[in-house]
Amino acid sequence: MSPVTLLFFVLGYFVLLLTVAWYTSRNSNNDSFFIGNRNSNWKLVAFGMIGTSLSGVTFVSVPGSVGNIGSLNSMPNALGYFQVVIGYLLGYIVVALILLPLYYKLNLTSIYNYLNTRFGEWAHKTGASFFILSRTVGATARLYLVINILHLFILSQLNIPFWVSTAVVLLMVLLYTFEGGVKTIVYTDTLQTSLMIIGLIVCVVYILSNLDLSVTEAVNAMEAKSLTRIFNTDVNSKGFFLKQILGGAFITIAMTGLDQEMMQKNISVKTLKDSQKNILVFSIILVFVNLLFLLLGGLLYLFAFKNGAAFNSVDGVFGLYNGNLNVTGDNLFPSMALGLFHSVPVVISVIFIIGLISALFPSADGALTALTSSFCIDILSMKEKTKWSEAKKRRVRLMVHFTLTLIFFICILIFREINSRSIIDKILDLAGYTYGPLLGLFAFGILSKRKLPDSWSIALIAILSPVACYLLQHNSPALFNGYVIGIEVLIINGSITFLGLLIISKKKSDGINIARG
Image 1 (cartoon, one colour):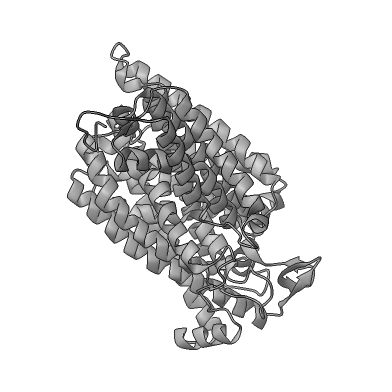
Image 2 (tube, rainbow, N blue to C red; image 1 turned 90 degrees about the vertical axis):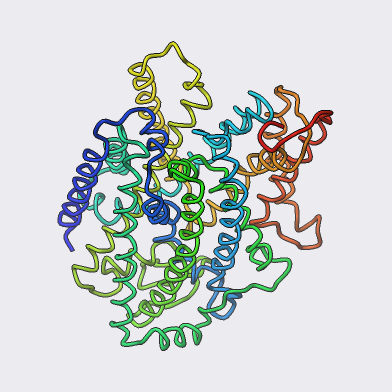
């Protein structure tokens, strides 16, 4: 299909988003931007959060991960990512029953104000800073994956440089989030999630039809190729099922429950009860959508085998090769949908591109909005600036929003230099290091009754903990008789932070409640 035609559909999609943004941002103010005037519909938030949680990483990287380990004869768990998904479900239950009641009780705009209430300014700034770091790294990694695909299959063929492709996509995101913030993205995310899931279902149906298989027959064919194994029972492996499930639960607690982007949408819902319904309904739907993506991954490999690809090793890297074309990992889904394996109907290519950019924009719009909110409220203390007019606050917010977009641009160019076949593994690894201190800070506040000194020592512990985890993870096979630390590094990181805070803390003599400390 012509890259010009595909570009036309991308631009048409963007015009649709701008129209929705214009309509929803009318009469908006700073409160609309930060928390949607606490009037968001929980059903829309729940559905839209699917797109935010899945992103382009799930859309492309999860199907590709199905055949991403060793050779077909040595895959211990081709669908191993589903172990993490099971953990996600457990984590969402904790978020709904423990963290959301706390946030609503304190009537928070930024969830990191809890740390200020509990421990003081240093804890507040430290928690917010780690969120800004975490979300910036995670969001730009997700953005890079999708922008790279758009560039590779569309914009590069028009002789457009990668940096221009990146700038254009970020400009699109900037334009439709500039005014409305949360009030706008609740609606745009709902639209984009719908299109992404439609794209997923259409691609699954097309491949089943092309292979002339029912779902049951397809699963049997995947099983014959060792593509249906979920659980890894090797205790020393990074993919050991208990580590993956437990790690997935804590990743959800950290990356959703302690993440301003995800919680900003939840606390924009009017009541706690509706917000909890939002989380629980969303989490159940998310399990089935992830399972469908993994099924798609298996189908893509069957489709590739049928159309001449072979699973072998080139330069020590296992993957699918069709001539000189490497179609493994993150390249798998785009290669099928855009006709590199075998000619596909034009409508499938268009639906894939629409689904892909529908997965792209929720990764960026929510992140930019949440980072802007956190920087303005937590770092600049905008809520306390009583002498600032509403107009000045708006000017500062817009300046922060633009500056963060520029930072996103720089980070994506850096990711361009990191060559990885499956970026979802990189994101989970990075989350373990950057969200660990947040996990430790919140856990210490909720689970203990001790008081922390309002000093730089809190920030020092939060910085040293990931460093200690890095050294421990890279030396774990030698230290622990072959045991490899994987996704559980988040739990270890949070535990080290908790222990450090315990060492510098003092016993509080008077009573304590969960909010005040």
